[in-house]
Length: 328
Image (cartoon, rainbow, N blue to C red; front, top):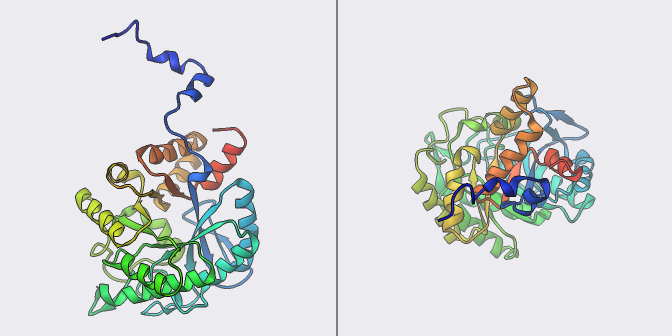
């Protein structure tokens, strides 16, 4: 077997042209989904304190945001709603005229080609902040399923292109698929948060949507970070129930799960580069500890290299801007 000095691996790294020709992993704006926080009301746009550079916007001001994304080449968004009022059952999530329904209509009126994906979960709409119906201080799985299905159909009626259940209730993908099919949406895909871990990386998101649980935590339904085999069972179950895309969340601490899922399952794999991961980069950059223009592409490339063909990231606009200017 040939070895040094006959083999010199640095030969193919010696120029930019050679490095481009031999690049094994590609990353483009086409791989990215940009999350959007939408607040109920009018004429309101404010920065989220714990997520520098990320804003919450009312539906009437969304056209400006959507036009910017379209110019950057970002063609997919994931919507999270922040209602004015909440209740125990999260009725604002599925009453047919909520903040997300208005947001979908505003986006589609501005740019019909933008792919609109909606988060399906009750946590933003409940007074207790949990992702399901509460009975005897426990999250009742089976009572939650029809409400999630109603929410998905409501979003479909408003014009959503895809729904993304993030609640982690057992059987939610099957319930949503059945309800969509029954209501005339057999072609609407489901991107399931299949391996969603009970993670400490979600703090800034919960601050943004005011969804921290008022009691306990979400460990009875979100995945234990210690259990990779169980995560793969969750992914497999969602595929059996009809998920078209499966997701691993968070991304960076679970690259091994992304990699194993992409090797085992012949469906598109998504990964969520979550709020805590975003905010750590921003705080480090603010304190001159890292060069974010170098770090962000490296982070996104690591997620793509692990096997995620779709990346949900708050860095999407920055990456798209740098890429369009030839900086990546």
